[in-house]
Image (cartoon, rainbow, N blue to C red; front, side, top):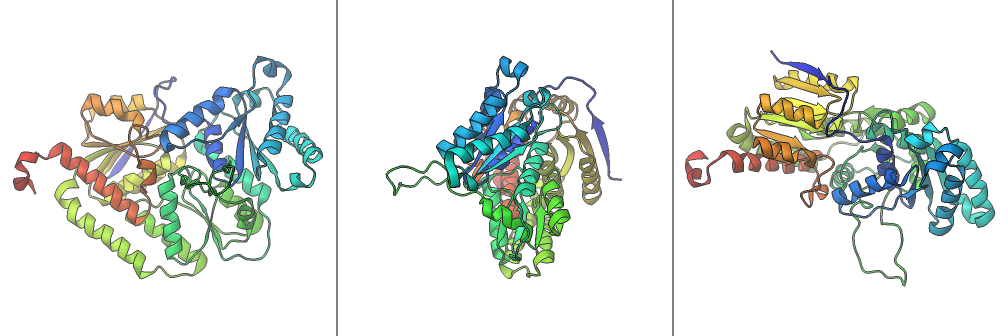
Length: 460
C-alpha cells in the first residue's frame, strides 16, 4: 500500500541549506520587468551574493543596486542611503520601475521604507520634472530572517500587482505567474500559450533578461537594459485579463489579489512537468479562454507518450530516485518519474508548507510508491538518508554533486543553482517538450551508469 513518511528536521543547525533568503526571490522577480531595477536596502553582501548566484547559474550579468548599510546605519537608520540611492538610480538610469527590497538589517532597525520611498519620489519629481511620472517606486517587504526565497518572490509579485494593476477594458489575455524557473522554461510556456492562440502576460518574465541575445548595436551607445521582461503597462493591464494561472503553489498571492480586487479568476497549480501536470495547465488555459487545445499540441503530447512507452518499461521501470530542491520543482519531477514507472523513494525540500506533504501524499497514491518526504530539511539530511537508503539516481541542483560523488550515485542536475554544467538554463523541463528532454536525460544517465557498453547488444 502506498504511503508517505514525513520526516521533520531534528537538528537546530542547518548544514548545506536547500533554501535561501527572501530578498533573493524579490530580486529574481524584479529582474523580469522591462527597465526594472532592484535596489536592496541592506548591506553589500545582500546583493553581491545574489548577483553571484545569478551569474554562475544563468551565465549573464544582472544589475542590482544596494544601499550599502554599515554600522552607523544600524544605529541611526538608513534613510539617507535609501532616499539618495533611489534618486541616483532614477536620474542616471531612468528606469520604468524601481523595486525597493528590504533585508534583515533594514527590517530589524525598523526603517520606514514606504515613507522613505515617498520622500524619494518627491526628490525625483523636483530633479526630473515630467520625466519622473513614468518611474514607479515600489517597496517590497522581504525580511530575510523568516521564510525563504519563495516567499520573497511571492511578496514581490503581490507588491507589483497591487501597486500597478488597474481595471480597464478586457484584453482577452491570460496572466501567468511562472515561479522561479529558467529562461528555457518560460519560452516553453510561451510556446504552449502561442499554440493555444493566446497572448499571455507573464508576472514576471525572466526569459530574455537572463538569456539576452548578443547582437551588433545599431546605435552609438549600447542600451543599458537587456531586451525583454514584462512591461509596466502590461502589469497594469493584468487586471483586465481572462484569468491568472500561477504554476507556483508557493507564489499565489498575486493571483489571489487580482481575483479579489479585480475579479480576475485564479488557478494555482504545480508546474507543468510531465503529462498530468501539463494537461492540467492546458485545461486551465482552456477554462479561462474557451480556446480549444490544437492538434499540434496533442501531437507533442503523443510524441512524449510514445517515447515514454519506448523507454520506461525497458530502462526506467522500478528505478529508485531521490529528488531534492525547491518544493514546486520537486513535486513536479516526483509525479513525472512516477509516470515513467520509476519510484520516487525520497523527496526533500528546504521549504516548510502544508501543501508539500499533501501533494506528495497524492503522488504516492498515483504512483503506488512509498515516499519518504523530508520537509524543511537540508543537504546533510539527504546525505545521511542516502547512506542508509541507496537509490539508482539523484535529481537536484549542483550543490548535491559531492554527495553523488561520494556515494557513487549519478546526479541529474535540475533546479537552482546549476553551475557546474553549461546550457541547462536554456533547456526546458516544462511542457511536453520539456518532458521529452528530461526523460532523455534520465534515460541516458541510467544507460551510462548501469549498462555495460561492451555487452550492449545483449542488454537492449
